[in-house]
Length: 151
Image 1 (cartoon, helix red, strand yellow):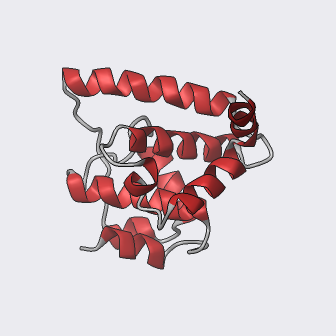
Image 2: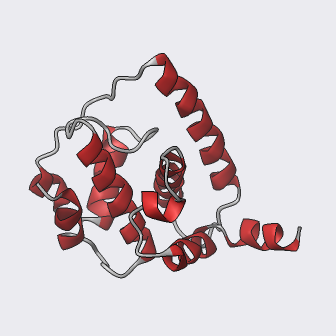
């Protein structure tokens, strides 16, 4: 099954950088792992279903996902601690006008999970270019980008 194509077929806005990034990290996780495991570290089954219903309505059924608790090794747990630290940082610097707390949580976990992979972040999110990553970060985290550019 082409997970990315299925997600994008159900996307609320196929041109939105957030939707593109979420589809990228979800589809990559589903391709790499067990399609029945939770695809984004730190989001439970209910949060994952909410994410799918919110940004990809109908995709949950189309993908036939039966989301279960992911199994972790001790190495995974160490990396998960890094994800949680990054999620905390991202959530603390999110623009409250960008979205609801649930949306910020999903985007933060997706970005943090993608940071664990071995390519450039924009590639890990399966974005077309760095431009979309910049748009995504400017939308959700504009204050931290402004601060970084002045330092």
